Image 1: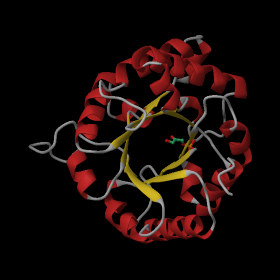
Image 2 (image 1 turned 120 degrees about the vertical axis):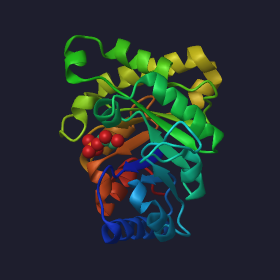
Image 3 (image 1 turned 45 degrees about the vertical axis):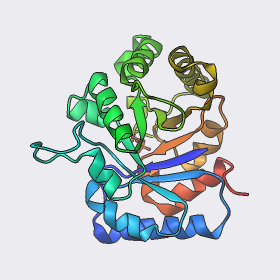
Length: 250
Ligand code: 13P
């Protein structure tokens, strides 16, 4: 089970360090069996890395460029993220697909560069409300997985996150059977690409208004291997409660 926090564009130095320290001590205090990841904004990566010292919490970034280095003003390369101590990078989040016109083809190239730099990727997919209402959810999500998945994808370096755009930050979530339907389809697309065994091992996270109150139901579903959490990952108590409700404490 993976519990990953996407802090998005939130947090100044003091907040970020406090949040990371709270998560680090909560993870150290109690034996928890989840794989924890926190993905702060670029500006906090070094500080959070230091604050997490000694805790089994991996550091992730929220995006990277395709190139290792060069004339790309304002961008950050995967090699730089690796150098800062990142283990993961989120790619293709719907906010980046919308705000920065990122295509699945670009996400795929970024993922291959990230893997070359030694990072693992969390690749996001998900339909908009209009697409769901038009009955296109399965087609849209399948296409995004097929087109975003890097050629070197395997369970050890790639995680998929299904995040319906309309569920992000809205308090709305798909029903259990809607989540199961998409996750099963993602697994099917992965199987066709990677074979059944490798696809079976690849983690598929659910994201979109995950909270302590719905974590138990969401994370018990077939083919749901964890959560990618936005708003609720900014409060350590909520983040840890989601992990606990997912059965991560032993
Ligand atoms: P919320 O948990 O705030 O809905 O955000 C989900 C998300 O976008 C995680 O990447």
